[in-house]
Image (cartoon, rainbow, N blue to C red; front, side):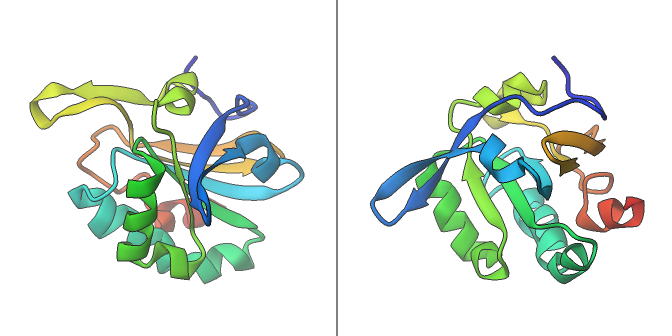
Length: 162
């Protein structure tokens, strides 16, 4: 299934690093009766993800808050230890961005946003995308055509659409 505007997100369990190690997080719990932004990245510590995509949400966090967004969630196809370290190194954790791991790409595959690029060592990674979700339903969806770009999926683009 490739996700489209109007679709309900599939039930998915992602991971984050808690005080006692990895913790499961049900996406349905984060989206029920809430307005959230979810953005997917090909991988933690990769160039465009680190220098453009995550920063576009950090610098606009207050503007999203003003628009009624209750949480901004980044999903990366990495393990929760890497995602946690990346959140700290980018400042996403201090900015209030929720960083979640999709280590087996189960959620990414369920929404049809997976891709593979063997020349750069990417297998079942996430396409770059941004979505506005209200009560679990996709209201705006911006998939990036090229994983090396961050234009359609940038925080500023989504803000302009809201």
